[in-house]
Amino acid sequence: MKLLSVNLGRAKAVPYTDNPEGVTGIDKRPVDGPVRVAAPGPKGVGGSGLAGDAVCTLEHHGGDDQAVYAMAREDMDAWERELGRTLSDGAFGENLTTQGLDVSGARIGERWRIEPEVVLEVTCGRIPCRTFQGHLDEKHWVKRFTQRGAPGAYLRVIEPGEIRAGDPVEIVHRPDHDVTVALQFRAVTTERTLLPRLLPAGEALHPESLRAAREYAEKYGDADPA
Image (cartoon, rainbow, N blue to C red; front, side):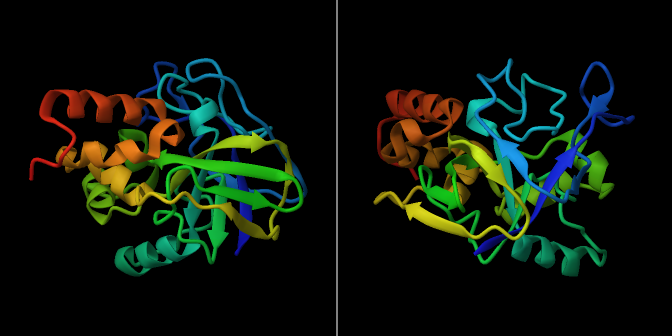
């Protein structure tokens, strides 16, 4: 398991973003050399966890619980075959393109060490938006991406440091619950009856998902009504 690339984006003016200033940092490109990773601060204030990476819509992106976005190269390769086009590392706006790691199958609270010093913790899946669809320039992309259910993972920074392409990735903690990124993503998008099943992940969950799960369980009970 390793990092194929570390990807950074600069603010870029585009016609398809919801950002009031008309700019987005979704167009991320692989970089050479080390990149500093650290907790950026709370959502709405902090941006990316990677130095030099632009996050332009702070109310929806960035912050401590969405500091880093990772996508498996294997999932991108599957999309390449379906779409019939090349998808370079960073094409999904991911900071980390991984190899040999089941990113969407990772458990919430799972911790990855990127040698030698950085530790990241999985918090949730990536929700597709209009900016993502415009960036890929694929019709019905939000629906298609959601239906696939392999969204990649957002991570918080537990131990800061430097990373670079080629660094090995090791899973150093895997929780004993069964709440995966894929399950969390389905629960907050297409199958909200699954929300109570997220509760065993506890505080490791992105706070917005944890709040939604608790509110649903309080209203409908802890068991999946379906």
